[in-house]
Image 1 (cartoon, one colour):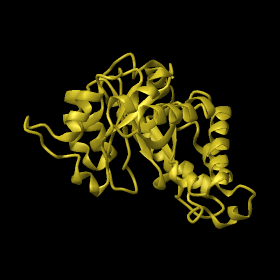
Image 2 (image 1 turned 90 degrees about the vertical axis):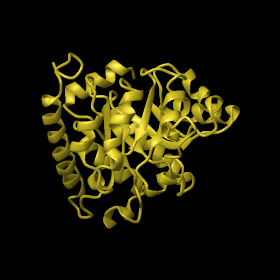
Image 3 (image 1 turned 30 degrees about the horizontal axis):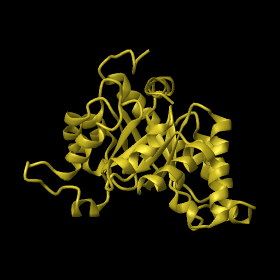
Image 4 (image 1 turned 90 degrees about the horizontal axis):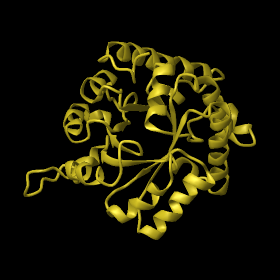
Length: 281
């Protein structure tokens, strides 16, 4: 998926919504637990109900790996099903990988060859050689952690160097030299939306994957105010606020209602954004 193809999807669907498939067997509707594969049955219903509203899905690997081989199989089936329903939707493996080069090469192979995901989240702490293997796949993306939405982000991400630069700023500056806006995004948590304006000073054209809107309390309006660029440049993720909108038999319908509410708000914001050929017809 290219940068232009992603912006085309945003324009076509009037949406920059990513739905996080953080599928927890302890939270899905109880009636699905009788299914042969409860995780996939839940994901399939969510995808059926929302694929016309979302430009991306983001399965969080922890919820699949915790179930062993069956969970990995559910993840594979989910990726394949998304592809069959809407080949143009971006599939983001939220894996937060990052290791020495030879190990990262195998991670890249897993997500980009075996599974055919479009993007994978990566941790940049080990430096360029831990990220490079992911960049050898044309049309695939890496999404580098910059500012996260959790409380523990304060432990390291805001350390200031002798040059008076915060650690996350140094991560942005250095990692933006490893790739281009065509295959590199950054994670920027919605609960720190005001800092998106600082991020935009460093990476004005790159896409930002923004978690934390919805259940974590992030504001979509603030994310757009501080983070949107002339090409939109945002993929805003909501997980629990959409997929767990109901635990009843109508869970898929309620998920659609929640997703549509966000999509309609995004459509309004895109209409009000600076007019560009990338965002507007």
